[in-house]
Length: 389
Image (cartoon, rainbow, N blue to C red; front, side, top):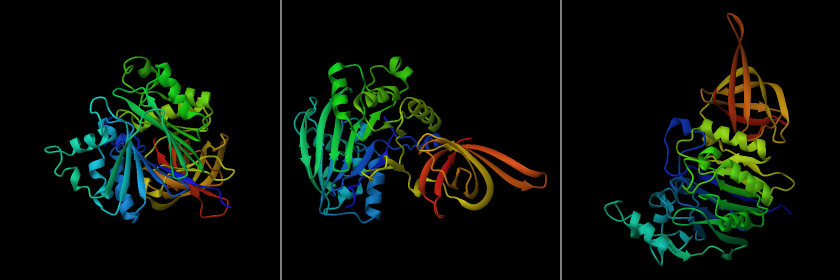
């Protein structure tokens, strides 16, 4: 019998406000939204940031509307976690059913989440109101410390340390456990313990890493966010298998996130930085957690042919050097066929050589691995690289 498989897709990974700065293209500029497809067919959506619009468009393009209920968990009511809801096309289709979950705000009272959604779509802030959404919608208030079952999946909630309150969620599926704990600042013992209870033994631990350790200790202290080093600390203490750095600061360029990821990987074996379009597969038998990027997130390429020498690090952490041919090339990146399989989001150096009138010329480029898939030739891996230098 095949092992149960769960897929976790990242549609929005940026914190505080969306960005369209070209320097943030590689990791993405949409605010938080994740999708978890459990082995029993249950669909979860985690937060309703601007990434929700992209998910909804993909949902419609793939013809995924169904009578099954989709379960949407909202961690808290700040703009970056709710602002995508008015643009989520499936909510305007009466065939769809949604169950929303969040907490009762002391500022709003009963039915807080419905109030928040209605308020952000009220005149004059939006051209249509909440009643224009014809999908079936139900709302459930949950509190920190609850545990409940959805299909074959166990959901646990805990309070986190963030202004006006925030919930973290632990979802245990037959394929593995995903913990979503964004918008959390360390320093309150009881809430620090909540985070560790959520994270204990998780396969995937998605944790706030908006600030550098220096920012968190100084000018950003008290702002309700965390750092990669705190995420590593919790992952190490609780036996997490894979840590995902999440909620990137809007002022953090791709190069800054690269640096934070590099520092985290020096301290912990299995770390990824959340990236729009990234898909993590859980439950593959006898294999580590797999992360990949679909082709839609890589640059448009043209056929070319250059001899190249590629150096990098494998998924197992071993350095490699390999001569190959680069056949697909763009200004932004390349698709390279390798016998080695580099680590996702690791840095590689590509030295390309081409014959010219002045003899053989070399071009030395550095880039990050954003896509890994099976190669066209047996025993090879097709590696998508985005150039940074």
